[in-house]
Image 1 (cartoon, rainbow over the protein chains, first blue to last red):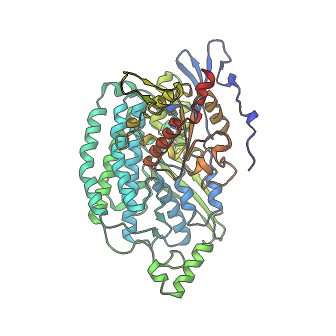
Image 2 (cartoon, each protein chain N blue to C red; image 1 turned 90 degrees about the horizontal axis):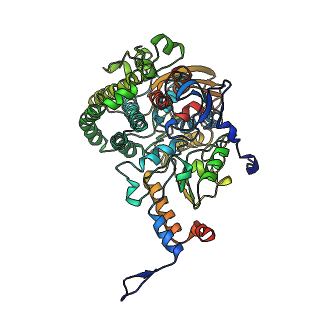
Image 3 (cartoon, rainbow over the protein chains, first blue to last red; image 1 turned 30 degrees about the vertical axis):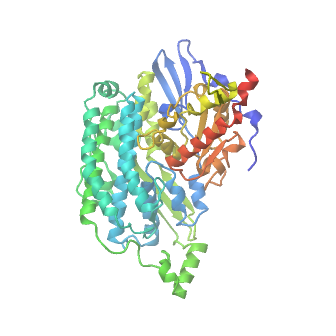
Length: 411
Length: 161
């Protein structure tokens, strides 16, 4: 790749602020470097005084070519790039991808129960961690710095479990086609129990500070209101849709990994404003905790991968003694496995909504296409409908409450 | 710096004094790009707490910051903006390239990602990892403090003074 020509790098200053088409309006550019855009969003705002007339989002500042990159990796390797799209919930991404590939391979019914339970526990832990980041940064945007500290401290407890089990704090790549990369180490249950025990109290502390907080209520109630019909029409999913009173959750509607066996509620709030979305996320953390607790209680034994040497590499101890296992291992590492020709749409409930993947196989050892349906992308486009009429300070609250993650929006 | 045993004063050079002062007041810019941004935010969280080293004051404007932490993959679309932000920072300024993507493009060897932010910015410290843990970022800030104290780019003051 050639080096960039630095002389062309100066962008035109008149793009940043200019007069609108009518005399009283002002067009300003918010972002892409702005602390409240949660990444690299650029919003072109047309203002009348401090009131937003129109808002137009410009995305693509974090375009990484993840979909294209996945096509150049073996089926198993693609999990790593898939993880890095929605970086607040890497395990939701890999769960979706892995489920799709397993269905294409026809092994989705063979996944061991232990692997499924662990997948559910870790996806829900990820959901709590992601909502905590959203809550912390959202509160910080509104001026409550200490909530950020509380939220990140709670998130560290989850990351400690992640690091202990998978070796990585953020991009675990722990879910693999056919099960999990490794079984949990000794001591995991004790760590999880500690978390399960301490979390509700800390969550209720957080709720006590925030839920009836006058400043939070003043800043969020009635701001960025969207009706249920509009929310569906704009394609919102996840907490943003449930904040408008629509009880749609992929975990209930199209359950995977045994989610149908867990007892949890769909959190709904019918205000349709930023406050509703905020309350839905608070409640969802509690429901995620309930799922984790149930997973902990049933925690079954047994293997964490399927018994198929053509897909899952054999254990190191076996490779040292068996020629056949060595050949299988060599084949898997050097050329991966082939997936029969076919196409499939798989969706999971990521912390941001319905994450979908349309995976196409041409029969080879690499995906032919991995098309995403990133929930943030669809949630963010509603900004154009939510922002007009609000003050420019409220725009910050609206963006925060939509919870976009730009790794996922731009891919 | 020389301390006289019998007199109530110390003698030093202006440069050295300024560099000594700067080591404890590195203000990073609030600029999150991708995954690393979350770990960058973690360095101010209670468990890591960079305020111990005077580097917790994240400024949202490039005009008020000394340190740019390039936290994540830099797409070709973002590269000119990054350079513009760097140009807007007042001297002396430093750059930490955080993570594999910022340092070399990382696992994204494709049409969209800049293969290393050092193609457009003068990087002082590279931090490996995907993403690097907050400890690693704090270590990078400590390395930067050593560079600043030893002179480094703080010579700019001598030219302008």
